[in-house]
Image 1 (cartoon, rainbow, N blue to C red):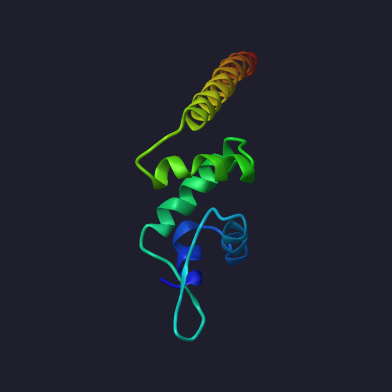
Image 2 (cartoon, one colour):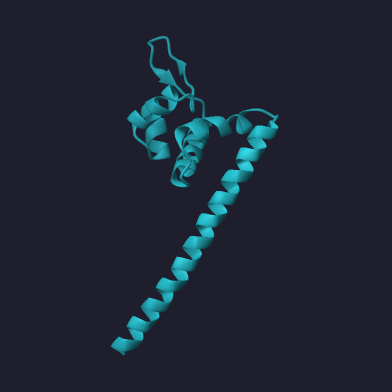
Amino acid sequence: MRIGEVARRSGVSVRALRYYEEQELLTSGRSPGGQREYTDDAVDRVRFIQQLYAAGLSSRRVAELLPCIDTDTTTDHQLAMLNAEHARIRKQMDQLTTTLARLDKLIEAAENRRA
């Protein structure tokens, strides 16, 4: 699959895909004409990278964690990083849940005042 197709199917720009390659988060082969060619799993990988970015992980941290997906082995250091990121994201979710509940109360109060 060519770079434009991966970009379209994953919802990211071609520029982002080139950046992912520069950061060694994504790999591609080359056609005889020199064009990038990706495997079918590239779209899922790009979507996962995007999810990790959305969760607040840096490119460096993503690069450190991706080998856990690519191999059947996980080092103690990688496991510790996975657990740390899990805990950080869980804390963010808890904070967002609290904020959402407060907003729900504000909306309910505002709606009651209008009635």
